[in-house]
Length: 193
Image (cartoon, rainbow, N blue to C red; front, side, top):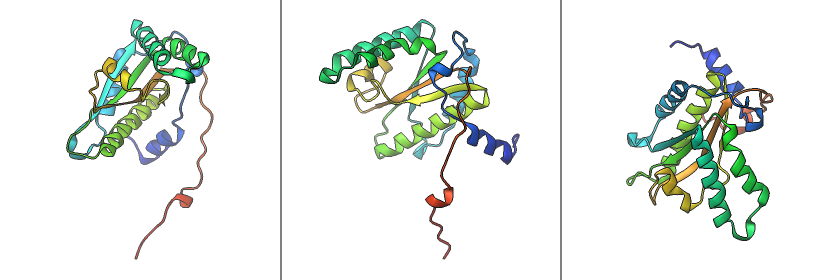
C-alpha cells in the first residue's frame, strides 16, 4: 500500500460536500484529472461484476446545454409545484461548475435493483474521496430532474435504468465546515457469541 491507514482515516474523515458558492469561479479542472476520478469510481465493487454505473460528463458549453435542458424539463413537468426560484437555480448553477457528472445506473436484469443502486453509490463515494484527495470540491445532488422519467434519454439511459443525480465539481475557494458524526457505538450491535 502506498498510503498509511492513518492517511486513509484522514481522507475519509475530512471529506465534505463542497457546494457551488464555495467553488473558485472560472477555474477549470484539467480533463485528465476528471478521467482519474472516473477511473477510481470505476473500481467500485458490484455484485456479479455488473458495473452498473454510467457517467455523462458536462463541461464548457456542455454545462449550459445541461442547464437549459434541466430547467426546461422541470418547467414542463413540475405542474402546480413549479417554483420560479428552483427553475432559475437549475438554469444558472451548472455554468458555475468546472464539470458536472450525471450519475446513471444501467439496470442489471438478473439482480435486485437495490444492488445496482448500491454499486453506483459505492462508485460515487470513490468519486467523492478522489475529488477530495485531488484538492477539489464536489457534492452529489439528487434534486432537480433526477427522478424524472423524461430525463433518461438525454443521458443515454433506457426505460429500466435510473438517473441517480449529479456530481458537481470545482476548485475549492471556501472550504467546508468540520464534519460531525454521532458516536459509532450508538449505531453498532456487536455479536460475539
